[in-house]
Structures are given as structure tokens and as C-alpha cells.
Length: 330
Image 1 (tube, rainbow, N blue to C red):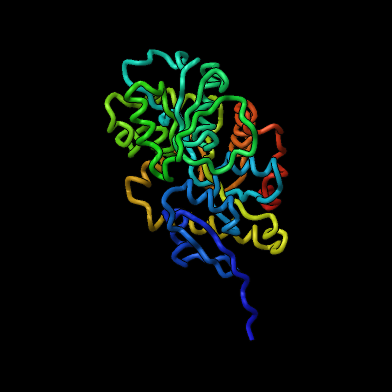
Image 2 (cartoon, rainbow, N blue to C red):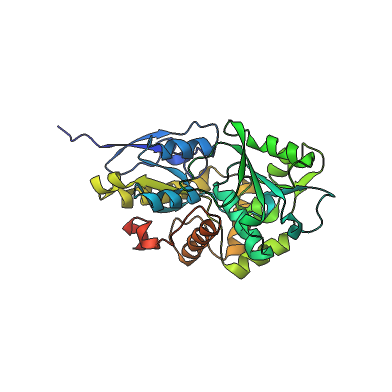
């Protein structure tokens, strides 16, 4: 009688990168994959992973780092999904702000204080304009996934919080009305984050005057090339106990995600998406979705740790070797 394969439960998005896994075209050698992909938003997916519902799942990179600092419950795979600059995710009301430096002393909205996109946006404002997190007041419209520490700033929260996936409209309305001076939201990633377009400006722009604070593509490209940092928004993580129980699983997961991604590029991306993907790779001079822990990824993760320490979300500068499965360094 054949030995029954161990069952691994995964919480994943259903898009070109994972479709081959979700639909069974790519498997995890020696394992039975039980994949859940029906979520209201990435925030819900990350929340359910953090609550222990899945053995392996897409996870907010910032939340992963915070949870790893508190307890070694999870390990990261070198599988990086959503990436890209966050400048276009900073919105203001036209005519009410002349320079980003004017945000000092103002109230800024965000959908979650600890969301990765928000951490990156605050980091950009710190490095480029000297705006410390403590220089501003904060308003949160949605439900936090995990904070883990007392914050060094006062955070006003909408109670009850807006359901997952519905947080943007609340912030856009308040920015339009002048009750918030800016809002940091999740949104278009990858080449859309570099070159513009996508859905986010339209969604936020449904309220009068609300538009991105940064729209200069040349400046965004300059920042990427100068810093050699390319924000990681979501990564794949797994329970540490599962990695220890199945020591061959991390390598097989990495291989499966790489295969699914390659198949997805060939079968499931539109011509427009492929063209954008090629433009993104040309700016980086490398493939940001090769699912490897290269020098750009290491530099980027270190920056994310630095920003979270400044923002009161972390205390310790964690070594990368403590964060990733050992196969990431092979």
C-alpha cells in the first residue's frame, strides 16, 4: 500500500504566479497541497495566516518581521510576491499641500499602521524628506493584522474598523474633506508602481481633489537605482514547526513556486502584463520575481527592519539568517 502523503494547507492569492499551483498543474513533490485562495483582500489572507490557519501562506513582509522578533513561529521562503515603489501610494488633496515637508505636524491616514505598504511609504518620507514618524499624527481606518508593541505615536482608530478591502474609501473621503492631510494606502505594485496607471488613482480619485503626491516616473526610477532597494510587500512564510517536522519541504516549496511562476508567465499573463514585467526588469536590471534571496532582496529586507525600528514597530535588528529557511542561502 502506498504511503499517504502529508497534507499541507496553504493560503495563497489566485493569480498568474500561483494559478498553476492552485489549479494543480504544479504540485509539491511528496505532499498533498490543500490550497485556500478565496479571500476578501490580502489583509484577510495575512490575518488568517497569522492566526495559524495555514501551514504555508502569503504574508505581509513587515508583519512577518514583527512576529519573528516576538517569537520564532514562522520562517520565510525566498519567494517574494508583491513588490514595487510606494511613492504613488501616498495621496493628498490637490491645492492643500505645496511640498511633502508640510506634512510635519499633520494628521496622516492609513489603512493599517503596521501594513507593509505603509511602513515603506513612511520610510520613503523619512529618507527623502527627513519626516520622522513621530513628527506626524496617525489615523487608522482598518483592522490591524499584528502590531506586537506599544507605539511611540498616538494613533486614532476608526471603531469599529472598516472591513478588509473597504478601507481606502474612508481615507479618500477624509483627505478630500481636509480632515486628513494625506493617506498612505495599499495599491498598484510592480511596473504600475513605477510607471503609473492601474486602479488605485481611479479608486482614490472618486473623491474630489484626491491624487497621488508623487507622480514623477523619472524620480521614482532614480530613487530605485540610487538606493538599490526594491520594496518587498508580500512574501511566502511557513510555520517553523512544519519546517522542522518536514525538513525536505522548504526546498520543494521553493521549487514549486518557481515552477508555478515560470508557467504563469508563459500561460496566464496578458501581452500588456508581460510588456510591463519586462519594463520592470529593465529598471531593476534583474528579475524581482526570480524567487531568490539576492543582494537586492537582502538590502531591501534590512531597510524594512530599519524603518520598523524607527516607526516603533520593532526593537531589534534581526540577522537575515534567523529569518529565512536555510535553503534560501544555498
